[in-house]
Length: 295
Image 1 (cartoon, rainbow, N blue to C red):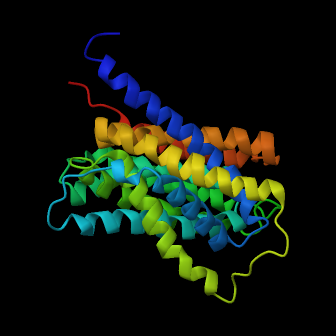
Image 2 (cartoon, rainbow, N blue to C red):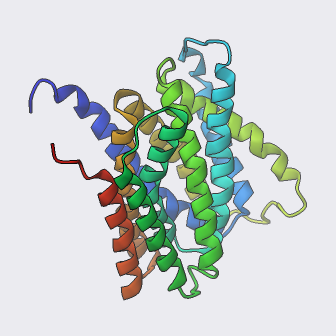
């Protein structure tokens, strides 16, 4: 390892840790929404994270500048607010494995978002890769039959794709904010704004409190709040603050593999031969978008 590469080791390990946690979040969310209303699950994880942060939130500081509140609100509105609405409902209709596979498109979507909002150059192969990944996701969804784990895969996968659109907005806003703000401060703001955003949802007629609280789903909500909302987002925000946006986002490609393995081991989810081929097309599109042009 060269001296120039050592500074990247810690953020790289942080990003790998974030991906391991995020991959497991699909499994935990799938279990939790099986017993609790999706909006109740999301509020629970946000509230747990905000309370956990409350004890040391005063240590976080940022170099606030006029207008930054718009970017902070945009970041939190995209994720966790809208992102978790789409993902929580998505996992009621599709399997954790299929939802995780759709996350493979996120690096391409972030590259396009960075082109539009941050002025970063986007080569033509990125657009070609994005188109190919779309074909793969459509194929994956089209051949998915309704099962116990995925009663309506088309709707579920569509909702997960919308969640990825929100994640794109979050990462673009995050990259701009990490220039002046501590990564843990941004994680705290996500949890706090998320808890406030989802609190009114508890008053909705459709969101009923459960008569009893099953232990395993309840522990999944706690895991989502502490390990994912604080741990995964904190590690990712730190890695994003130390590495280029495109490089940091490329680690998201680990999530589908992790989710597929955990979905099979823990939930007993399976893919058909065509679904594996369709997943391969998604990854091929991602690989095409990241190929470097020969000099």
